[in-house]
Length: 318
Image (cartoon, rainbow, N blue to C red):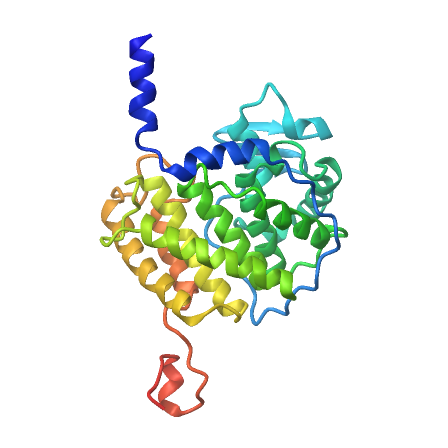
């Protein structure tokens, strides 16, 4: 009994106050989904360029995650009790929408999105937990920014998901979970029109500014010193920089902070990688794939001035 109490003490003493009352709030507060229709999407200035992510769909209803292939053929399969939760989480992320060769599987993707909307009622099941909701919001928006037409009901579903997420932020977990929540709010706020979207964007940016400064250390490493989390966060920051180019509603100081963080993080990732460019354990693409993705993302701000000195797309003094 004493050893159990000691273990609890050594675990709980490191938690922040927000993690105590945040957990109580998260369990007691059960909001109702807000089913109002979505606002209009903003017209993007360019098309989304995907990173180098391996496909996970092996058929219209078959998926390979964590080296295990399974089918999701019925509505119940999204929440199968005999299936590891992490595997199911991956199914709700929809990463295949922005994986290599995604255009070749466009019809699978459209059918899968429609199935998810029909088979996962708002607020119910694994797919509506905050973390998979956050990743799915971002992936669906990337897919739309890449030039795909919305599936019927998709935009309304996205709005419901974002409203739900904003009421289920994971302050009790902090770390990569709260970061993913903030990223989803920023993406949604940058992509939709209207006052509601501006509120999402403002909330997401405030969270992101705080988390970025805490989670990315001066040497560029992730504060948990995990190569996998580092690779995830580095790709996230590159995503945000690309979003700023495609949806030019994001504030300049935040974009500059992302650029500076990305440079430090990419240098750290190269330093830590094995000779094959990969890291010890990761569900992410190899660290080496972050470098080609970086070449697709403008790391310097574009100058609106048409003078000849701006042909390099760097800021000029005029």
